[in-house]
Length: 271
View 1 (cartoon, rainbow, N blue to C red):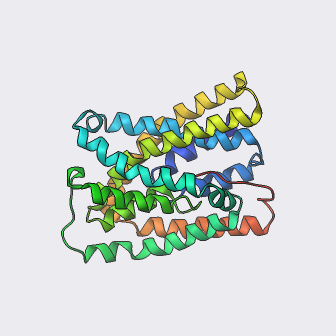
View 2 (spheres, rainbow, N blue to C red):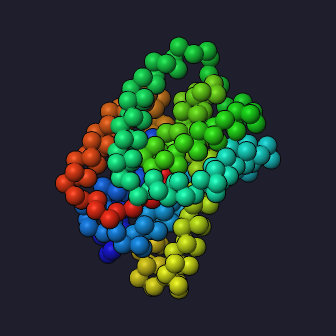
């Protein structure tokens, strides 16, 4: 893996992490086309640069993170299901991570669902437009939806946004709470990924690897900031249907590349 690879993957991470289109699917395609998907460091890199994306949420919404304590309680309640089920189902999840077809099918099925999402929720009652309207039971239900995103290709953002919509949140509020919930979830995933890499490799990162991680996180930070702002604006004007078509196209591309043998020996990452 070289600097150009790192820059490309960081840009993809920044763009896709908070959009409901699965960063996993895009990372799989990019790293496989570049011929670096089987590299153990690439696998940890694609998870570790989520830290830069986390910082973008903290910067854009810093006022939210210095407000009342109840906000953190709601985040904790929403985060716990993924933490618990992640530990209980680790073996099953790991087996899914080795199946590229699962990624493609999850993208396609999720895309089909997104085609009908706008019309379905438009027929529902008035939506809540404030994070303060999220009660603890609602936060827990959104957290249970996040568990579904452990299936690679589902997209953590997609699962939690849909979870928020089912709890009566407006699309914008559901998206913003999804951003907030990403902070503890992605931080935990990043720490675990770094720990596992160091443990499995029996040492520490080389100076070149640390440089690539630093560059990747900086790029992911700035790109994610732009992606978050653009996503909210696009969602307000156009809804989810475009993301549905896009997911279907990406899923089909992955299936085609898989049939051509691009993913032999490839294991994909989380979310």
